[in-house]
Length: 487
Ligand code: ADP
Ligand code: MG
Image (tube, rainbow, N blue to C red; front, side):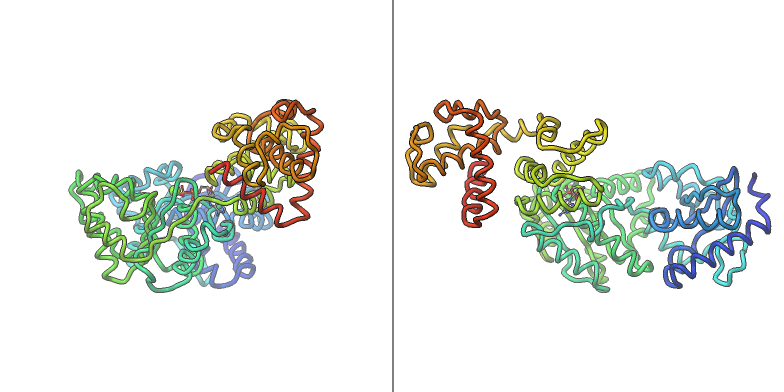
C-alpha cells in the first residue's frame, strides 16, 4: 500500500489507538511521547510511524511500541506490528534541510534511509487526525540539538546501576545533577579506569532528565564525535552551525575527553563551547580515564577549568560490589546462577565491570546452549582463558608464605604432617586460597602441601567456606589475605 492510500479508516484507527493509550499512560506521557508521532505508511500488516528524534524513537520503542501494536491489532486484525523510525519534519519543501539532517544521522545506521516517506497523519491533541505540516521553528531547534546526541543505551539507567563504596560518590553526584533543574557543580568531572561505569552514569543522567522533563535538552556525545563533527564543520566552513547546535543545550555531556588531548583546535573549540555554556548556567558533565590534572596534552587553562567543578573518582571494584553487580545482572537476565559460581566470578574477574559482565554472559550462554544448569565446574571450564590471565601473578608458594606469616607459623608447616589446629587451620586457608586464586587442580595443590591427597584439599576448601559463613572475623581474615595476594 502506498502513502497516498492511507485513508479515513486508518485515521480513525489511529485515533482509537491513541485514545486507548492516552487513557492508559496519562496525559503527561501522552503529550511527551505519543503526540509527536506521525503515521507515515501502512503496508503488509505493518504501520510505520515516525518520531522527530532518535531519543524519542528509543523511548517509544522501549515503552510503547508493543502496546501500540496490540491496540492497533485490536481495532484492525490485519495489523501485525508497528515500526517506529526517526524523521524530523521541516515542511514538505525543505529538501535541503532534510538532506543535511540525514547526513547528521550518519552514525545511526537505520535512520538515514527514511527520508522519502511523506508525512501523513500526526496525533493532534483533539484526537482529529491532521496532515502533518512543518513543526514550529522553536521546536525544530530543540530537536536538532537532540539529534546530534549519540544514542543512549537502554540498559544504562540509575536503576540498573549497582552502588558500592568505589562508586557511591560519583553515583551521588550524577544523581544530584539528574534530579536538579539547575546547574550544580560545574562541570561534574567523572574519572576512572575503563569499564567502571562512567558512560553508564552519563547515560543514566540523560535518561533521567529526559524522562522527568522532555523539554530540557540533553546532549550526550563522545569527545571523539565532538572532534569529528567540529573538524567536519571546519572543512565545510559552517562552524557557526556547529556552535548553534550547542547554544540551547541544558545539559552537555562529553565522554572520554582524553581523546581530545593534544588536538589543539578541537580543544580550543571545546573550551569556548564549555565556557559559553557555563556562563549561561548550563550543566556540563565530562568523563575521562584520568583526573583533570593528569590529562596529558591538555591545555593548562582547560585543565584548570575542568578542575573547577566537582571531580568524582570511580575506584576499582571491590569483591562486594562485584558480587552485587553479578546478582543484579543475573536476576535481570533471568538466569539461575548458584551463589558458588557468583562468588567464583567475583573473586576471579577483578579487572572491571565490563569483563565481569562478559564472563557472566559467557557462562549463561554456554549453559543455555548445552541445555544444562550452570555449575562451578562448567564456569571454570568456560572461563578458562580469562582466569588464566588473572592467575599469572599468584603462585602456591607465595600463598603459603603469606598465609604462614599472617598466622605466625613457619612456612615449612605448610608441608609438615603436624595436625595441631594452630597449623592445620592456616594450612587449610592456604589450600583454599590456592584453589581460589590459581588454576591448579586439587591433586596438584595436594602435592604442593607435602604430598597430601586431593580429598584433603577438598575438605579444606569446604571447611574454610563453612567457617567463612559462620565466623565474620575469620571471613575478614581470609578476604584480607586474598586481597593482599591479588594486590
Ligand atoms: P566506562 O565508561 O567507565 O569505561 P561503562 O559505563 O561502559 O564503563 O561500563 C562498562 C559496563 O559495565 C557497562 O555495561 C555497564 O553497564 C557496566 N557497569 C559498570 N558499573 C556498573 C555498576 N555499578 N552497576 C551495574 N553495571 C555497571
Ligand atoms: Mg565509557
